[in-house]
Image (cartoon, rainbow, N blue to C red; front, side, top):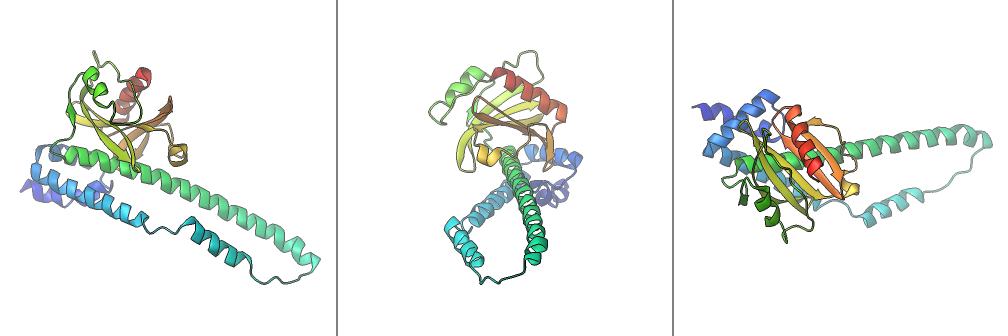
Length: 250
């Protein structure tokens, strides 16, 4: 069966490890096959459950501070002035280098975590039997539906004379923060547009320029206190075109 070959690739698809052509082909298959869609959704839900469980056991700030103080209060040894002149600057350079590398790695991990969550949300939507809670191609129907469901408002673009079609929207969550997920269609492909309140501490490392992440093209920007993400298995040009429409509408 055709599904057998696709099922062997579901784990790689969910983890963003397929080539762009394979990811696009599998996404098309998922939209047409209820069985594979259910398997993909199950894998995404398991992945998100594991990620949430992992965060529950992170060491607290108090525990980390206690360890830092215990290391810092070790016995002091006297040394010659020459030892201080030679060793102290070298130690400072080493500490600075470690600190910079730690900061870069932390920001990279944070950025990858954001992209991973967005990819999971997008895949789960494609695999869901009910991808949107409000079904309408009319922006004047979709936008008011979110009132009272999320703590902010936003504008949607006019799509007349464009290749894009609004499918609908749903409330979603990124890092437990509520936001809007809008589904657009272009040439039988779905694109997710996410809108959240901007939380610079969590998304400051996310670049504004288009990037390739987890088999998807992604573009992100901030405007009027909101953080936008556009993600899909379409070309970078399609992502940029939809992003421009959303920017101009906001």
